Length: 328
Image (cartoon, rainbow, N blue to C red; front, side, top):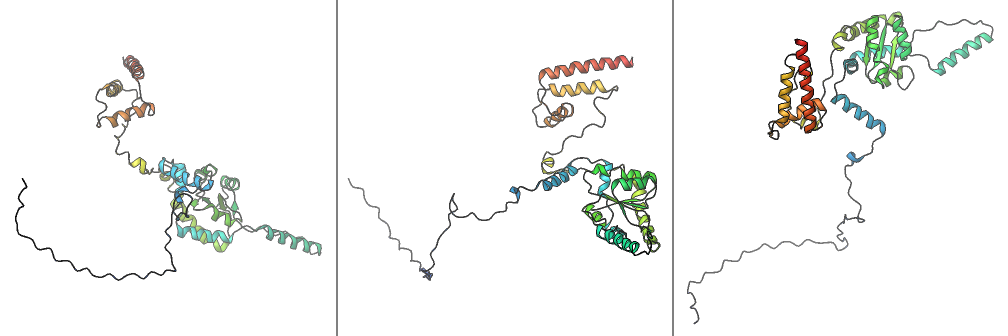
């Protein structure tokens, strides 16, 4: 039997929405659309920032690596003192004074000797001229002047490579009572003596009109360097951590006293450390950093096996017995 059709009211259809007529874009048939295809062997790739992939010259790589090492490692005071250079105002006054006492160039020396030879050939006599006061340059020359106490002011460049060439000069100047200072840029000192670079220069004599200016510089330099030598020679550089170092999180601080010290608490502390290694719950996140710290401190990061742990325990027992015998 056929099912009966359900009777209901007819619903009126929704009114049609009147759409706005969009204006057609006029396309110029002379210009054809040609989309680019950046597949392999197709269109030229767009320009990208390739700074990370540049193969830099060797000297640039070395100076960047050296700068990173100086930040990461603890730099000793003897090397760290070369980071404390003279301030800009004092350095400008120093360079202005040093510019007046630049040594003569090869061309100037040749002209001077030629004029002297012409006078001698003309029968006017050979009268030797007095040597004018000039800067003395070079590590060996300046070292000799400091040892003989003939240098009035020593200027050292901060970026000498290798630094061992001048690392002894501040201590020598302080011992001999010669004022010294550190200035930024070995190339700046090199320009004073007609070279590309120069490690150190020294004032030996100046003219009478410049003695006041030199005395002011010496006073400022003594205050900043010679008088502060004890403070500077004991300050280590604070190392700066990188991103990967900071991402490790906060490790427990290592103990102040060495675990290998021979004292009364030594056996008990070592047994405590070995108990950490033998504990079954070493995989817990709370104990894992401490366990890793114990292993790294004594064995350089290697993972210890059961034989190594047993051998360590045996050595610790013998050490404790020997210590007890000494103490009686």
